[in-house]
Image (cartoon, rainbow, N blue to C red; front, top):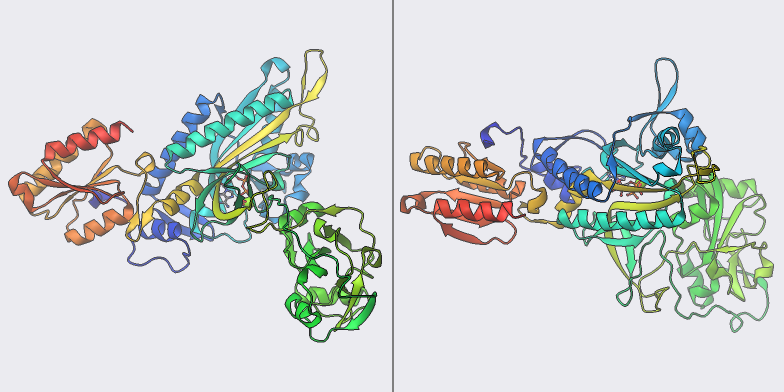
Length: 576
Ligand code: ATP
Ligand code: MG
């Protein structure tokens, strides 16, 4: 490829809406161009990277015994009604109507389509197990599309679905996919951590995510892990053993009574005013789950994990209530308390979820929906009966590992892939059955396995860059080498550069010749920004028969004869 002909536009500045490194660099180096919110053009450089990742994924999936197919992107509502997800999926599902007023959606994932396909084709146990995958654009109307390719609305995903006749079969395939995923990400130059996770809108019970560990803002997930054993989990799924804490307020409160607690709007103010630790306060938080208010009760030194709470309610969308919504709830129940004084009493008809930390509390303090007042010395018999306690607590670093009891640590991660055991979550409602050895109809035992292809490319940039630009791993770089003649008017420089270019090309190396009439400094800057793993500079030293060979990753520079440089590059690149 000649640089002068490349369809690329590098920018002088980072785009103003870019917050994370991968978005900044991919946009500035001309890999992506935004069309509209969360929707990008993949320019030729980007497309080369994406195709390389796709091909690694294909290779490993095929080796693992899966078969590739391609399903339609536009999907009919009826199948989503069969699975029960038409209502359950929420607003990420982009719904539309065709000219006949038939309701459709843009595929955010393909469980419904593949299950319908399987039930038509896989009629006998003799045809099972099967694992089918595709690589395709998905559309999700994300609440907050951001970070460029990391969280787009239209993005490329590999999604695979397995069909088995038994849980043992599914377990085996799950392991098989976990291994394939580890290989895939290693080959992409991206070491990942496999962590336990919540299974979200897809459903099912067991699931793991593959996280690229990063200390940048781009890591949207908190991963809790233990150095002493193999425990690691996304914060939406992590559990811990608590450190000992004071949970009986008998020494502060001799009787149960309502007292004045003026201006104690926060837990901090209240514990200071009463001179007690916050572990003796029962905190009541108001959330809105699928448009309805929900009260969450938790020991006040701990925070609520929203996904856990949402799952406990069985909802699909959750957010903390606004002060206006709290005021409305208060008015509805005949109270006029402001936030800080809310409590569970008198909230008939409202869903109340209590965290496990509440169970052990005695002689505690709780809001009673009266501004500037609290009930102190309260016990569980003083609040509405709690049928069961659920873990809705956000784990904190330093709490103890649920497996081995050592302190947990926390880090940030970018989820690049995940694997789920679906069981019969789709096959049962969609009546996707096969006939077993006895001629009896049985639902398939299913698994599903996703990889964000475009997110993986962006995660690779998060993991491999410096202040000058991207440092692509060789396996997914758009090109391996750039040859930079310093002065294109210099005949010898151009001749040597051209010869090296041809030799590398014919050896199978992917190479760019920067034949633009630009200052050398500009070309070097672009080469670093774009992130070619190797640069060969043909400048004045060519008069002594030498060129400069530079490795982007390490900054290593060698002065070599042109034929030595060609040989070295060919050896390194073709051995990868
Ligand atoms: P997240 O928690 O990040 O929203 P998810 O759980 O919704 O991800 P899945 O539905 O399991 O993700 O999708 C499979 C893979 O697709 C994810 O592991 C991720 O790599 C990728 N992916 C999901 N949503 C997006 C997005 N909005 N933009 C880019 N890639 C995405
Ligand atoms: Mg999502």
